[in-house]
Image 1 (cartoon, rainbow, N blue to C red):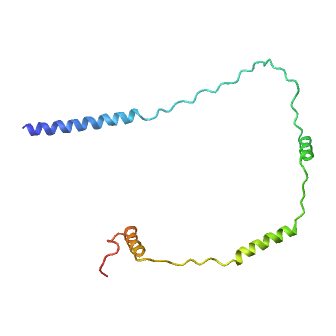
Image 2: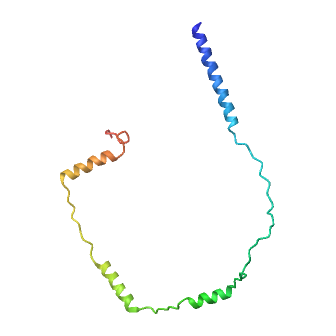
Length: 129
């Protein structure tokens, strides 16, 4: 009899927690707010005096910038280009240095070990063929 009461208490506690969690999720839903009414700006006189009205004349501005910009026109220097071309061709014609391959027994063994470590697992490549 005591075992049945224990089982009933566990079921009731589970149901109580389920309904409690359901109520909390409903309460946490975001409440849609009504947008606030827009306010009209109040027109009040400003006690500031403007000394000079702003007049932006685009053509005047363009004339000023053209006058201030220095006119620098360089003619291409053919000798400079020839020297640059020669240095590039020398770099291309220079043979690449050959490196000798030096393998030692220890380096080969170390390479095989690293291949086993970094390679796919043994289950992907079994010993039997």
